[in-house]
Image (cartoon, rainbow, N blue to C red; front, side):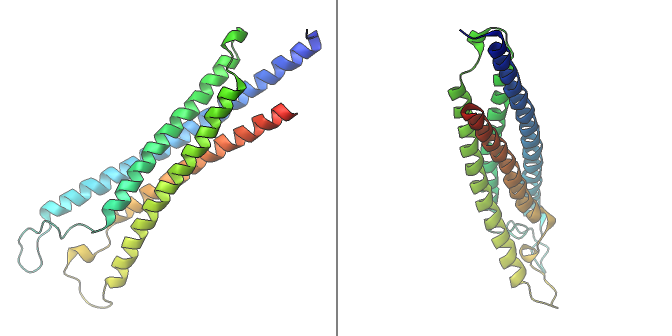
Length: 207
């Protein structure tokens, strides 16, 4: 049976864990949601802009509408990986929200409702994995997009007028790269938060 000082120490430790879980969970949640919203907006602008260019871009010297001249071939793969990265990011945000629920349950006077440490550690471990997978997906998307833009810039002749719209590098093309970069940053935030909490809780147990 625990003495009163031991009980107070255990309650203080539990309250501290709840406070850290709540603080880090909310920070990670809102940062990931904000960056996911920014990435989604950039993808929407890029996709809608590409579709608009497809519809209205005239063919060179003829004025006839060209269905493919206003788009950048190869950027679709960058859009796909960015979308997959956003899905991973949203799942990571959900895991961060679960951390805040764990903190709320830890502050409940009813000890039966307190989450088990193995349950919390499992969610944190899953958060690290999801963050790493999300970073991998968005790195693939960013690499593919930058490769397309690089090849496009190299193919442009210097000092010569360009009449083919498909050879221009437009701001809408950059949006795809920026969406992937935001995805990398957001998944990095989730990974660091989950890994930091995991190591901190592990040290709390050993201490």
